[in-house]
Each structure stands twice: as C-alpha cells, then as structure tokens.
Length: 166
Image (tube, rainbow, N blue to C red; front, side):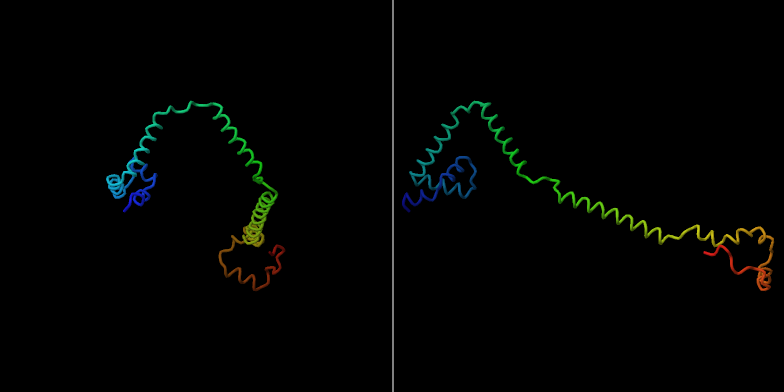
C-alpha cells in the first residue's frame, strides 16, 4: 500500500483517541502498526501531540463577570419570551371542563342519594303498621292463649279497617 492510502485510513479523531488512550486494543494495534510503517501518520501524531502540549501551556481565561451577566440576561430574556408565548394554563376550555366535572360529580352524588333513599326501607313504616297492635298491647298481654283470639275474630269482634294502614 502507498503512504497516501494508509494515512487516509486514519482520521485525526482516531489519532486523538489513541493519544488519550480511549481506543480499543485492536484499533490501538492497527495505529501502532501504521506508526511504525508510515512516516506521514507519525508526523500527524506528533503535530497533534504538540497542539495538545501548547493548549496545556495556555493560561485559562480570566473569569469575566460581564460574560456571566450577559449570559444570564440572555437566558432570562429567552425564558420570559417562552412564558409569554406559551398558552395560559387555565384557559376557558380548562375552566369549562373543571366546572363540567364538578357538576357531573354533584349530579352523580344527588342521584346516588336519591336512589339510596328510595331503595332503603323506612323504619317508621313498620311502626305505623303496628300502631293498632301497640295501642292495645296491654289488652293483648292479658290473653294467655292464641285460640282465644281466633275465636274472637270468628265472632267478628275485631275491626277489619284499621285507621292506620300503610
């Protein structure tokens, strides 16, 4: 293979990864093989090493309060713009849906209460039905035998139409 074809197979990103020790073993061996045989790849690797060394020698830039302030201002302006452009959280549709849901819950509760009242037995109804018996309970306690009551009924002594029928 020619020098051009071998060196064109290796990218600067691969050489940087090799310098940083981030390549897998197979890729690392391939680059080392090419470094032994290709002076152009060696030259590119040396140039990259010098660049990294020069970058390490540079002083870090001083903290610039103006840059920090302007960046924060840009973020604040962008956030305010996004808030202005976003639709309101509680629009007319949302309030309508909320009121509809509340009305539905109230209606369901009223229907449930009404059905419960209608289906539940009324304890006072039984008292009204038993009122004639309760009014004469003292008299009935005097009777020792049920047969005696039957004989009185057969003679027609009991009224058939009670005033408190339910």
